[in-house]
Image (cartoon, rainbow, N blue to C red; front, side):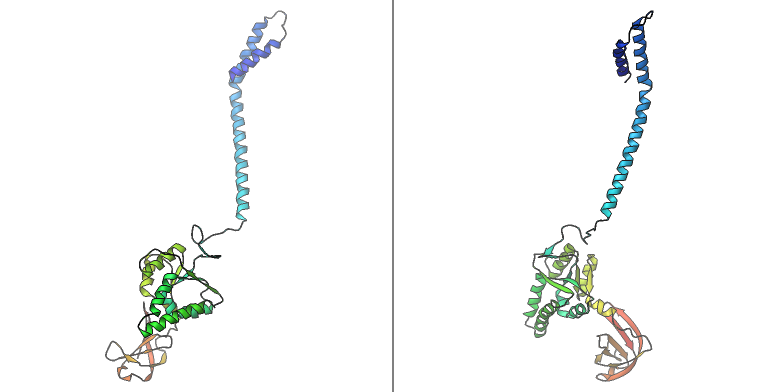
Length: 288
């Protein structure tokens, strides 16, 4: 920069008219040296000042612009799918966290009553391989199994009529050998929740970190709790594990074990509750 200033001073100093009694070359030389000195000493400070002002202004503008853009973006409605990637569809139906029925829940049938109350709503997905398994149950040589399988198809038809639910059939192939493995792989791929009454499937899903809705757990959680000291009437229907025990059942299926009632089979007794026990299979009441 000092060289540029000196060069410009040398060029423009030629325009200075000669002064009488002073050697003009000396004047031009002094002006050139002075301009070079100015360029060497003054300009770096000016450049630093200009750089500082420019960067400060630039940073302020960028910060303000980014703030305004962020504010405007935050005002737009956001779509937040429950799982990443493209949302799978059946026709025009988005499969976002569907409820996936397994064979045991369909045959059990209580899911229909739960859906009618409105506690279960939304998309209910029934995989094709579950229907295949249900068909095998319907074709069983065992009369009871055959009746339960056919009842399962009736449950599906009734579910389709429930106002707050939409039943769809998932007919795509799914990785896995057994039905339970396919079911869990499907639930994982769709981020869905499996509805079942199968205790082993329930445990396997928990180990695999897959959401499970066990109808038995729901039934146990809403059963009436009988406190120790309360009285109830129960019909003894069979013997218990101990030789002096008789066993009866409440209307909701809760087992009641009554001491000293082994010889009262077929009779209705008024008993007093002594304790409640919660087991993985359900609640048990002990009475005397």
